[in-house]
Length: 426
Image 1: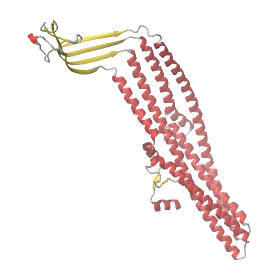
Image 2 (image 1 turned 120 degrees about the vertical axis):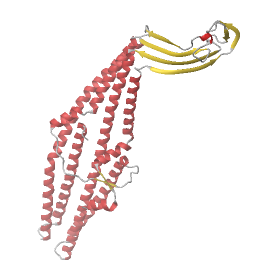
Image 3 (image 1 turned 45 degrees about the vertical axis):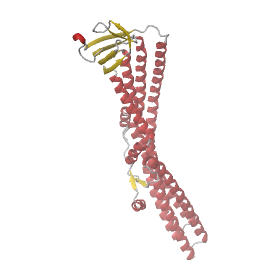
Image 4 (image 1 turned 90 degrees about the vertical axis):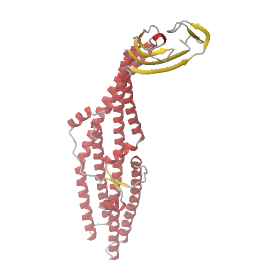
């Protein structure tokens, strides 16, 4: 009730866990880098596939070369001014040609496989980064939620200590209790005041740590949702099934192996020749026209095919193949290690969630027992049948039970969120 009233009075926004995750994804730089890497890898895959297709270029050029004062027999007219540079065909040369080029080789197909595997790995790494960010947000969110709950409990405990101090003072005034009871109650009240001050500071720090990920100004006031009813824990078979189908670490490691396999093929492709085909259509003549003097035809086409066969490169290709195979073997070891670590992590997470869930009922019972003990002890003290020390002990026991209950709820929520991350449902 007090927390809700405080939220209404301050006008601060109440941030749900999903809101916090969404805001963090928009503001966290490491996650933004992972998103950029995924998009870049997708573009690289497109470019690699586009390299398999013919390229088309329309080439236009005007070339003038100083004449050397002589004549030559080049060109359609038989005799024309000879250019100074022997590499040029004529004094005036016009080129306007459409050129289609196609390279066919194993290396191009292997590079496409490499780009596709890299894109798959980048997509998996993006999900890994997202889950890492979500894990951070979950930890900070529940830390803030727990701090707010502890702050509320200590505020209640402080008011309880104040009430007991008033009771001891009234009983001392009525000569029903010694002054030592008042001193003991005041010491308890002062301790609760210090505890409340410390938890308030800790809550502000936790809220700032989370706000760095959520808002442009970390000082923006906000509150988290209070702990709701504990959701049910899925069965172990359900967890195993979901986790096996939605594990980005395994997908990333598998994509790494596929990338290295493709790189081995790409390196081996250097042993084979590449076939380069070219088709050119247009003009390359002393006149910018489809017809030259004497109705000579300037417009036409040419076709060429080139096959370069590698013969000797001082074992460079062999060494590149060896490098690729070494990286491929290392990636396979990493894949098996990732599989083993994933199995262990999943087992640990499920055991933690199961233990935390089983303790929730016991914690609720402890709170009820401690509350009843405090009520009865205060009644006995009012009747003069117990001491102030017994009341203080009952107060401490009640506060400890409430704190343990709040911690237990957060522990279960955190463990369940970890399972949801491993299964891809959060």
